[in-house]
Length: 290
Image (cartoon, rainbow, N blue to C red; front, side):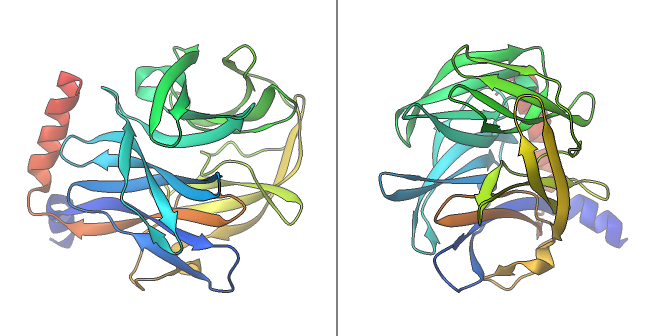
């Protein structure tokens, strides 16, 4: 009976949290989901001395992800503004700079494309710059630049259910599967490459029990056009994170950082009397392509 009640009336929804790095405070400050939106896949960046948080904004009424951004002020995440909206699902807004310009490669696997977007007025105005690859269902793509124009990384092939190494060439505006030597994780990425104390790391998701259950942290020993070698050093579970609201979190599946802040998302279960109606509405809207 408990399982039936959970299935009929409880939703999995997501929120995001931040922690300032120049503080001894270990608390992550949360932005909770509302009944209109929930938030996941956070990326943090600094632009002209101001900090911003980019996320997937799930529009609860139609079940499609959009890309949103909010300013960060101290320990507070501001209100999210939707900056990318397509007639298909968007998530995982991997933002990066290239030759002084801001770009984004969000998840667009349901369109079977890898799309590159460029900021025309950072952080709120963006346009599609180019299509990097087509006829692929690649999601949660992460990378790090290995020379002026090229970046090496990993994408998760949703059709084949495994990670693949990729080469992004910004001079040609292409992304393709590549071959590299070394030992690297074939699991779904949970955040992009980052630096800490002179070393490089990245995280991957553990999806054995449920999607995005917890995270594995890998230290990257070497990454270039011919080699990607890394080793796991520890795990991150919800119980390892000190959230400001003190409430139980079911899982964590994304971690990113910049020089000033680190960010995670978290999953909770929430009672919803009209859950089955919303599910039916999602399917109807997706058939219409909204």
